[in-house]
Length: 261
Length: 325
Image (tube, rainbow over all chains, first blue to last red; front, side, top):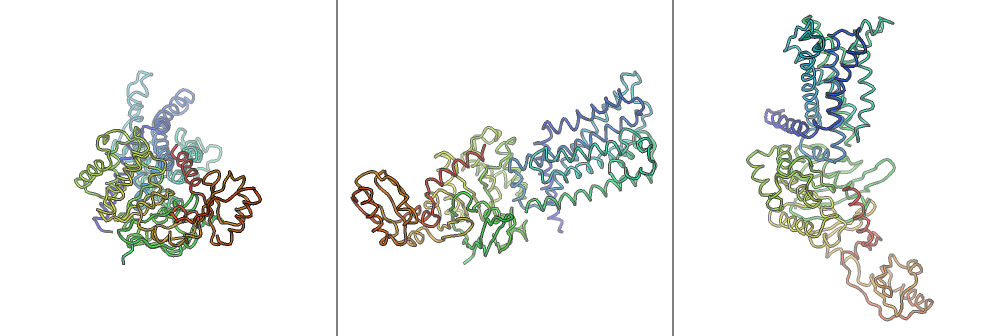
């Protein structure tokens, strides 16, 4: 592939990303699932589950924001584009389907990243406000690692969202399978409750959690937020997230190519 | 002779439904080509295949010198598509829609800005360039869709029912622009329509598609000449005609023009004159006149599809209203 063609494709990818950001970020499902829903979960666990540690509440909500934000944007974008037939406009343009999918994945990831950072910042600053302790106790933020972990979580989430959205004709068609997988991951990937507690009934089943990308997100975020960085572990988490993202994107492109024929 | 579009033995199946059957057609560069056909004939399927949106089941498709499925990026940069439903971004302004489309086609910023201004001017949208498209009428949206299809200055322009359901003013503006694009800029235009008059006025050549098959193809004059004058006869009676069912057994098509006047289509009209006389006698009618008629494109359409164009147009209008809603 020549440099000229690559730069042409990247410019087209960015045009699609920018258009999606402007058109779909403020749609109600994006706002609800990206911001409102994670905050509701936070307060539910803050009030109803005192056994959940502050660290898990924070990383859990940041993970859920990225996961729900990025996946929901994909569900909104694809179904609305299909309904208004603007998807045909993109398909008839001289752009590879892979680049088209990549452009849309980036728009979802940016949304997931932004909402997760906003929600995370609110909780870090004011999460313990009601207990008059100021900043969250034990907080030892590694900003760069934290940003990378949030971004990779957003990328893997938007790629996952793609798989269920590329064929969807309406939001519900994408949302119901997404909800099954999203809630499943919340409960088995150690998002709010540590994995050892989740699998206390059968410790040997813990490996199941490592079949899902969000487990690696939570691990990376815990390390980046509470100063417990183990470089090898962190690298493994990042590589796993990149691997899942690439795999999900390839699957999404295949489904998309089949759906447009 | 250079072909802008060449289709060979094209077939498309949706499960058990045969949408297109062995379609063959050739469109020369710079030609204004019309595809006429009733609802469900396969016009949109054909245009979707030509533009690379739907893959054919079998057959060969060449558009602008390449196969849209084998070299999609190269071929797609050479044509523009105006679909049946104006798929514009309603949350964007007209200007933003054009800029976004220009970026998808890698049109440099200065070129796309200059061309966008020209297109908005030509299409009568310059004053509304900064208005959100949500506020646009159906005709304005269609004109914007045409501008978006032209922003990268394509060689070929595909239009699927461009004037369907539009008011007279928008229809005239669009037809004028299409003629100008073809005559002055030499663009190849491939248009599907169910308006006979539109095809007759604009197109150099016309193909009639019925139930997935091309049933006739040629210049308007050639198509008219393909029906002998003697195949169309108008009969006037002295009183209102009760029912046409008896005559329909003998002819391809019978249309009631007035309560006492009918038009018959049949390749064996001379043989049917006896049936007409019998029909008049049995119903107590007197034949006032029998005239052969110079065929119009509408007659050609009726002859090859067996459909009444008035009913076809009414059906298409209802469908267009429903799909735009």
